[in-house]
Image (cartoon, rainbow, N blue to C red; front, side):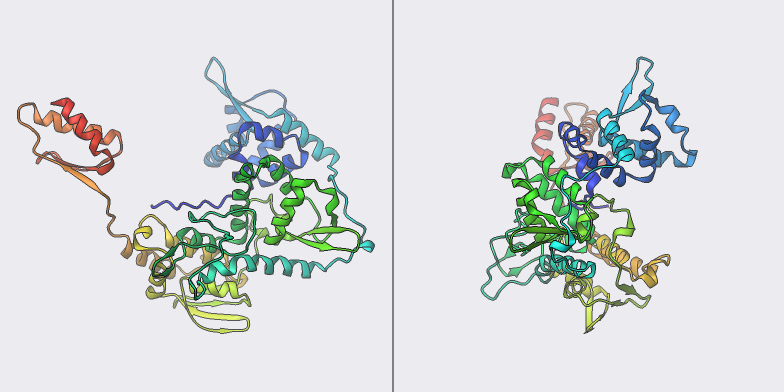
Length: 471
């Protein structure tokens, strides 16, 4: 299966990728420890709670007894995740027996947080001193702000002059650029027009949480280039997830880095900034308060709106222009009402996505249709979301068949070797050459009877030198 290049990272993946020193700095904050606990898979969460008051190492064999035999695969996933996060450390004694011990700093701070609770570094402002929007208005603001960011990406149309805003949301490689000076997505521009990059296409078909975490991950990854410690940004982001939705918090309680960060987050709809006569404040939205929740938790996702029928008809109950543009990426929109989009999925509409979005060469390395099926499943209307499957099987099977039409043949540069010399044992030389190419993962084909082999072009120089030495 082809590998896609974008990985929709959630909080736990992002933190796991940090160096050990940065992780230890984060675990000094009790809120980070609780956020880690929130975001763990259920079995990993259970292990943390069971080991929370165990000071000695726990043998691996003992932990395996905590689950049923059919749960060993989930057990290994949970253990691997805890080790990646340095919540557990693995040790092997002289008898080669493995044991696990909890990170002391994480253990102590989590104990304090669960027993005594935590106090945020800032208190909310009195409700009678500020004018607060309703929760419905705040949620509407967050969704509208997010759509303002992503709508130019979905439409991917250039101006008549053929120019785009150079203050780009995506750079030429398809990755977000920060800080957010503009809400315009950038796409690769070719001589004959504009094309949506494969990165942009994947991004648009992700759910909102996945999009948010992809952007936040890149924002944190580029923090050091701006002279900011990534750990301080992560700490602030996770503190935001513990704030109460719709409550006002004084901007003067933030340090310089946090005040710069809050302005970027406001562009994405994570917070709303308001200005009073004397003071300024920010109000966290639902997007900010769910930052530390794992993507597998469907309770935090937005309500779906798509219904797919067995006749390939598609109905989207939405008023969003963004949703309409996303549907046009892979479906033929037939008509649009104020709160309903009606369309159909067919072979031409899917192939049109390649013509307007990515080239045929890119298609070989990009599992394009996987994202379409996943998009339809994740955004299924509540009436069909509880059904199994949420998308009719004949539709998903046909989409995969249409995909196979484009991926029947894969071209790659190669070199053919034949006519092995007869002065030496040609059979041994041929087999040695095959082994050499196979060792480097460059052997594409071999015929022992005709003594012919095909090797990837990148190994040609090394293979030629190897054969010369054998002679």
